[in-house]
Image (tube, rainbow, N blue to C red; front, side, top):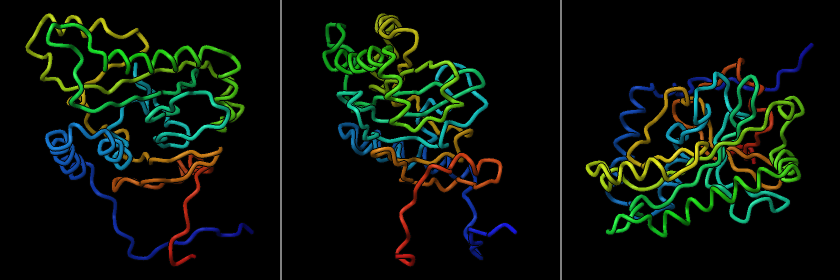
Length: 253
């Protein structure tokens, strides 16, 4: 006989419909853009609570049909071994049938400018792009890739896939360049092919991400940080959460 290790909670609240969630969250996000554009921490917290806004869960280029490993957005992971001098703001451990695609995301304050008044690339943007280039360099070294596997507890079956990291930079507002054809053209040439550059205005909730969580990672332990109101638990995805730890509720303490 199998031992039942779960509890069915009677009268549990239903998940929020996607239509309701997308309307409410978009309104909150746009308000945040207008009132807190100089506060990067506010956006870090918003994206932690709303993982579907962060691109890359199903890869940045193309669209995978597979959930990311642990079915979660990982926020500012604390990594053993010192792979990165500065850890990414977010990481998706995306995958498809052939590739394992870690997606490293850097966000900056929305009010930072890409260009100076003289239409020259700004020092802020140069610094942000340099951070991604450093990650690209580090993850081209075999020893660092093995350490990455260890830090994120990547299973053997996933290690057999092609290691193909991608990088995303969430930076600036569209108003800076959208009516200037010269700046638009320059911006399109700023990043290499495996980097996605997106303004904060471009982000919106992805309906494919309604069942994604946000987790933290510290010393090899994944811990659930937030669960969006659209989340639905399913036997089909139960194995995706086997590594996740949740702190006991007060009633269990």
